[in-house]
Length: 198
Image (cartoon, rainbow, N blue to C red):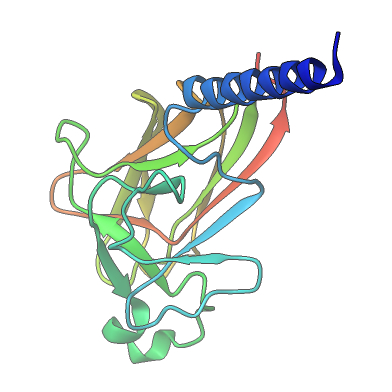
């Protein structure tokens, strides 16, 4: 085999390898970018969006894009305790604001999507402390109920709910819901990989 022919053969093999990798990525990650973990998101108010160290600020208008790999399916509401109660200024930057919604379990509301490779993940959902009336939150993950309705009591401590989740079709979708006449609140989402898929 001549040197020129050998070089052409190597180039052809390299091109086939690149095509194979590109096809694998396209088939293996239907949602786009796979998000690096641990992931810590601070659900911030547009006017008060200072986040603690190690957290990424997420605004209520930050909807999902394939390039980012996470976000809301649609814009959501937001509140900051400073706008409701001057005496709640002692709340830290993670818990003083939250994203919120009004949808009940029967209604189709916003969901939060995160693109991930296969595995088992620990998901922590942190609620803000309610400052006007009783709030409640339940969760569906990838279409299945993962958390029954839980109260968020006014003037109470922020609550944390920890779930073990696995991606379906390269993603997890977190759909919060509440009950009639109230709102769900989420101040932060945290995601850590804990092992290989079952």
